[in-house]
Image 1 (tube, helix red, strand yellow):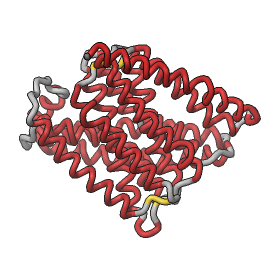
Image 2 (cartoon, one colour):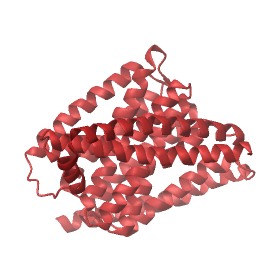
Image 3 (tube, helix red, strand yellow):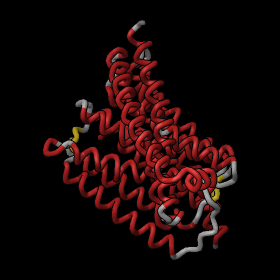
Image 4 (cartoon, one colour):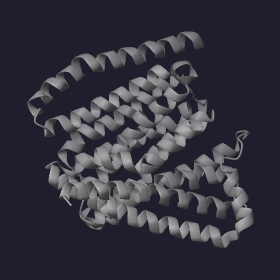
Length: 361
């Protein structure tokens, strides 16, 4: 079997295992939480979000253990960019997403602040274990804050996982524990297979591991978020679709990146110049773009969803073009992006933001 075909199969098998392992992990965790009487609100804020971010966590940890720092960090950065542009954009195309004021007031500004902090931490070329510890502490504080503030607001949501609750009542804690352990085992195996296949593909294609992490790996590990948000949008649960994206982005930065940096110990997590100068700023810009989009008429329209998807396509082209036979066109492509696409996007967002403020006044 040709080496590239073998690497591609490994990547696809790894993504499938991550998806299945994440589903088992979520089912087992929720079932245990239901059995022990943990409130549904706490389950949603902690267990479900952790389950959808588990693939990113296991892939990044395995990448560091195998000496692929660039793949570990680019997976986090690429996943956040994918979540905002593709997951949010696709969900808005299915059904315009209604934005809760809580997200605008609290969660999106927090996502912007953490994204900026991560860029600042990485600007020195290394994310230290102290920075990782700080991110994990921020996660603990934020989780406590989420639970306390959410309890102060009325909760009229229906159960998100009725089938799991029924299974928990019928199957008992033994089945829940088996699902949880099985999910962790499958996630571990899937992450190893995906990292191995991605590393081989990068070597055979002659591109950096960071590029593979920003594109193929990040898209693969973000499949749970994409499926969850699309299903939520189809069922009219637009609040769940948006909350899943924002919560996953925060967990990627604070849990996945923080835990990965802490595992590296004194050596820290190496950051490539391309990530510092190109991709981390794009991640911050996508977070910033959420705020005015969320302001416009209290919802994310299909136009804005299509705009996000289009921008992600251009971002992928910008990453891939310099590594192809058309690399001599990469400078011209970036010039068009800077002089044409970026102004159009900014004008569109500002126009809708101004229209919102006029309406609200």
